[in-house]
Image (cartoon, rainbow, N blue to C red):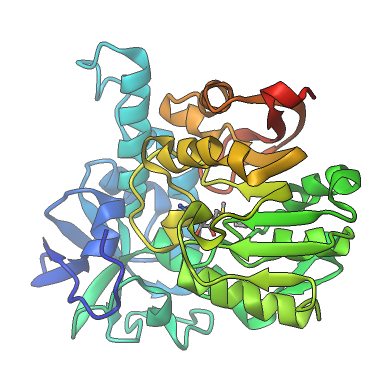
Length: 379
Ligand SMILES: C[S@@+](CC[C@H](N)C(=O)[O-])C[C@H]1O[C@@H](n2cnc3c(N)ncnc32)[C@H](O)[C@@H]1O
């Protein structure tokens, strides 16, 4: 993944039947390879457009935003039918076959495209406000016309709206500022899971690893932590967390360190509580935002667990949040966490869990917080 805004994007050329157009590399990673896309009016039958997407080629929609959105929703609702059920019949292993099918289905859905030109969406009328759209891209877009998967555009527009308004966050009793490329904790029940550990946090020194917007750091301070150190590998997250700590007037309690991986920002320090809402999916991050969601081979999780015992004071505890959503891709993240924790000399002292509908994959997921303690100290 390229993460600087100055690097010219790699583009894929797509034949639109109306000339060639380009698909910036950061979007091509979502669509997977395809060579052609046909132009359609957004008022055409969603069923016909779904059938076109099911060929594996792209569809470029022009017209009113709300019709484009309606077509997308139809295609999303029937996304399983975008890929023939026997498409991966040659793959013998069932888990691999399911993962390949899920990937192909997501890629085909991303091939529902809209046109952009520099900072504008010229063939989309009545779109929600999108000033500053390209600030939310990973890379500068190519000069001239290019294509965006509607699904990406929709996600970006939603995040832009949240950034304009801030998001209400009941567990911390105030709203959160959101910045581009920073993980948005939209479901309040997820950060709220830490409230159940208030007694462990009250009066203690806390490390919030991977702080993102700073939501858990602020929450820990509100739950009575004596001090909170917040760290993140992402400079955008660090800036966002500092903004939210200031908003909450908690600068005396929460210190947000400069961006660094894992424990590099806290050399030689130890804490009573280490919190980490880890990236939940196994895979290569494709965008700066994805660094919050994807952990290739769960290596960051493993390194974090290995580092924990040395960073915990006697009686200290790690509170690790993880979802089982990677099961949809054939993984076993919870089993892996338990095994890696045991290898690192940590034992599970308690588990909290909630069920919800996944924003990423659509299906049900269970989100866990594991209370981990060094095995020798007992639970
Ligand atoms: C799922 S998000 C959680 C953000 C926030 N704590 C929350 O609950 O909303 C994971 C966070 O971990 C950060 N992260 C990913 N890899 C990291 C690493 N190796 N070191 C430090 N932070 C990392 C990401 O940038 C992201 O902000």
